[in-house]
Image (cartoon, rainbow, N blue to C red; front, side, top):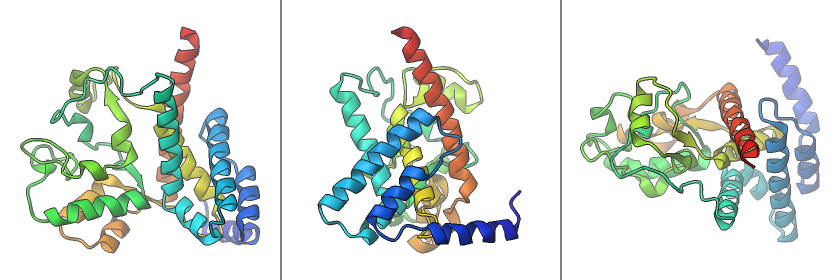
Length: 270
C-alpha cells in the first residue's frame, strides 16, 4: 500500500514533469506506461490519442481545451467512436447477431464493485437526462441492483440517448445467458465489444499523461444515476460517485484480459 509520504513524493515528481503545452503533452503521452493493459492495445490507443493531439495542434486548439477534453473523457469517446465505425466499415459490426431486445435489461443489473465505470462527461450527461425524473419509480423497484435509469415496468432505459459507452458496448448473442449470469452462471454469449477496452485504455492514458496538470476521474454509473433520481444536484451526485484511482486500473485489467482472449481466438480462426 502506498504511504502518504510516497504519494507526496510521486505528486511532486509528477508536477515537475507535468505538460505545459501541446508539444510537452505529446511527449508525455508517448512516454507514460499503462500497466495492466495489453501492450498492443495500449500502443494502438496511444497512437490514436497522439493523432488527436496532432489534429488539435493543426487546428489551433488551445492547450487548456485539449486538457479538458482528455480529462473529461471526450477524447476517449472520440477514439471509441472511430474504432467502432472502422470496424463496421470493414463488415465487422460488433452488434451483428445480437439477441438484445427492448426490455430484456439483465445487462443493466450492475453487480460489479465499480458500479459501471464512466467518465466525467458521461456522468454529467447522464445526470442531466435523469434529474427530471426525480422521485419517480426506477429500475431498483424491479431488481435491487438494477440501474436507476430503467423504467421498473417496461425495463426500458429512460436515458437511452445519454447512455455511456459501457452501455453502448455491451451486447449478447444469447439473452437467456444474460439472465443466468445475473445469478453467477458465467455463460457465454454476453460480452463487451473490443472498442470498450480501447475506451478505458484511452482514459487511462489520459490520466497518466495529465498527472501534475489535473485529474482525469471516473465515476460509478449506478451512483450517478441514483443521485440524479434521488434529487442530488450534479456536483453532489458526482462527488458521491467519484472513483478512486484503483477502480479504473482494475476495470482496465479486466477488459484488457477479455480483449487479449478475444484477439487470440480471432487469430486461431484465421
